[in-house]
Structures are given as C-alpha cells and as structure tokens.
Length: 257
Image (cartoon, rainbow, N blue to C red):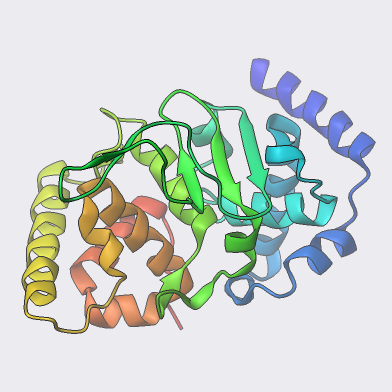
C-alpha cells in the first residue's frame, strides 16, 4: 500500500517537473556508457532517473548555478549502478551538492608523512556517512575511459559506490551482499586483488585501475566500480574475479556482447 502511494505521488511530481524523454536523451547523449542500455532497460533507467530527481535535493556549492541538464546527467550516472538493485538503495541520504570545480573541505588534512595541514587539497567528490554527497561538475564533465590519470574514471559512480558501501558497517569496501553471494568469497577475492596491485605498484608496473584505488579498501571498491561501468571489457580481461563479483553485486554484465 505504501509503495503504491509513493509511486503515485512520485508520478505526480515527475509530471510537474515537466522533463521530457528528449531532454533526458540530450543530457546524456555524450556519455558512451549509455550505449549499453537500450530498449526496456533504457526506458527503466530514464524512469529511475526522474524518480531520483524527485527524491533528492540538488544544491549549488559556493553559489554555483547548475542547470536541469546537469541534474539529469548526474542522476542518470547515479542510477546506472542501482538499475537492477532499486532506487531504495539510496534512501539513506537526500542531498547532492554540486560545485563548479574542486572544493576544499573545511577540516585538517594529514599527508602520508604524518604532517597535519590546516588546508585540504581540492576534491572532485566526497560522500559523507551521515550526510550529503558532493560533486565537482568539472570532474563530472571529464568522465570517461581515460579520465582518471589515463585510467577509467567517473566521479559520480565513484561517490555513489561509497554510499552503497556505507550501507554495511561504514565504508570498508564491502557493501551488503545479496543472499546468493558469499561474503567470504568477496573478502578473499578483493583482498587478493588488492595485494596483487600493491605488489605491482611497488614494482612500478602498469596497473589496470588508477593507483588511488590502493589508498584504502573503500577506495578500491569505488575505483573498481567506476572501472566496471566505464571500461568493463578491460576489467573483465585484467581482473576477471573482481569483475565477476561486481557483476553479481550490481546484477549487470556490461562486458557482455
């Protein structure tokens, strides 16, 4: 009963927003990932995007004036990972803040040498455990297969992966498992992949994902998630076990022919 009422109310709000199918298509036309979603899947993604915009509040950081097209694009990128999971996976937060460029958090920052700095470096995105999700539009616009230091990058998918990760015991690289998945297998495979990449990095070998993934298990999951959607065939070839588990978690197989 409650679900039907919520859907009815959302349908009314979507109609009031007035977004059209053509406006959505125009907003996402330059994102190659959308080529993987056609027919009924594309229709479902568009519908979920509109519902995302109804459920979330968008705000401009530092008085940034964002457009409807920007919101449509960000919402679409956010919905791709949960297309077969459901929008309810994002129900634990309500606000998306968009800055024009990188933003500087107002908190102390400690570098790897142990020195604490009063000023943080600029960030392209950030997901708070109990709070909003923050994005740099400049980084959103630079999404692509070579966006992150020559590696696949998508700041929207990256930060929303953090939000999914936070659903179980905080951001630790282990989001909630589906009933047909084995948590132990997830830990073993991701840990083994992490160790291999750490060793390869120390030997100055080329990595299949950006080296930022080695910052923490949470970042490893987030970077692997953006790679999974932005460059699935490469990930499947370079990290087949990780690809398989991400495919099971997201209920998608973007590398399928």
